[in-house]
Amino acid sequence: MGRHGVDEFPTDGEHGASVGLRISKPLARLNRATDNSTCGVRRPGGQSDPIGRLEAHASGAWRASRKGFSVEVVETLTNAQFQTVYNILSLALAAMAATTVFLLAVTPRVLPRYRLALVVSAMVCFIAAYHYMRIFDSFSDAYIAVGAGTPGVQEVFELVKGDGFNEGYRYVDWLLTVPLLLFETVAVLALPAAVRRSLLWKLIPASALMIILGYPGEVTAEIAPKAIWGALSTIPFIYILYVLFVELSRAAKSQPNQVGKELAGLRWLLLATWGVYPISYAFPMLGLDGADAFVYRQIGYSLADVLAKCLYGLLIFKIARIKSMDDSPEFAEAEMKEAPSSK
Image (cartoon, rainbow, N blue to C red; front, top):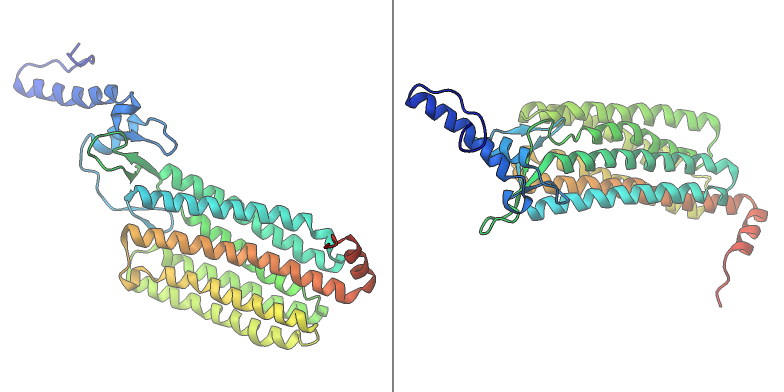
């Protein structure tokens, strides 16, 4: 038994003794790490993680580039950077969950022909909430706090060996929710069946193709393939905008004036929020990389998702209410009676 409380290899000379000592020292460090106040390493939330310390620091040389499932992930974040991403993901998750509940609760407040649009909008937010829960958990598990409680050492968060941060959940989410967003846009207008089918056959395949073509560029670190896949993904994106701004406008000419104004707001909201994604996608091609770029990308993606799903869903509800009131004076009168009177 060695002096550190572990069995050392039998030694016949200096070389054997040095081997035994090298093995016992990291294990002794592991024993000391059981006290969270001295180990200087903790999981988010305060749990001690001596194994993480030993894996990341016993050799003192784990600095290789890491890649998550879909995008390159920086291996070190400052405390402020980690907390910013942590909080923005939490905000997005809460917003998606709350909007899901709200949209389901207000479904009876519109005529039956418009309820499908609200249910689909609630589905969009529910799917997004699920994926943000997975993204949030993946991010929390991917980094470990280093330097906590160590005098004179600034706390940072380092990427843990293993699967890393899996941002592929975003693309799975977009593949499911973007077609549904376009479906609810058409459904809430209650267009003639032939017109509705024509628009959906154009919008939904194009939206799926846009996401599928963008993914290979997201997973590669090479600039040329990223640019090529990004350009290919832009083609269906432009086509979707054409259908929304030209063909949908033409089909919606018979809608009430107020609905036309809200529909215009929907389209501009989509253009503004969807415009965030290619900008963030192009960060590496613009020479923007590292921890700051990673944080900005997470903020941009999360806020764009909240606006494109939660705010969009609320606007869909507003349009459904307007059309319900316009279609049925009896419904409008009943709703006005239930509305709280102002005194």
